[in-house]
View 1 (cartoon, rainbow, N blue to C red):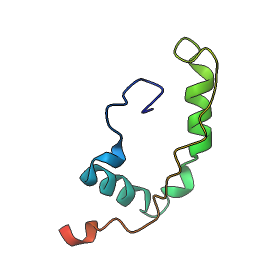
View 2: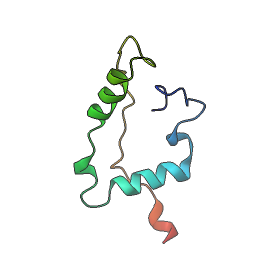
View 3: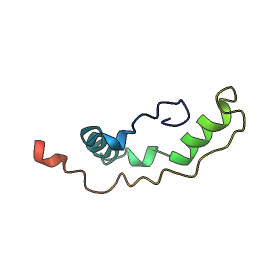
Length: 75
């Protein structure tokens, strides 16, 4: 999404609070099982040919949304 739709001034990872929130959501029971990042990337980059006529799908980013997020401090 970041690069595909040219919203690349900053990424979610560049915003610590949003990054923590995203990681917290991802770690909720049952959520990670429903997320397939390879499928999401392939869909965006392969089906929007007006935005990405070459249909090149990037390799990255490498995300580790299962690592500690530190949001337990705010509860």
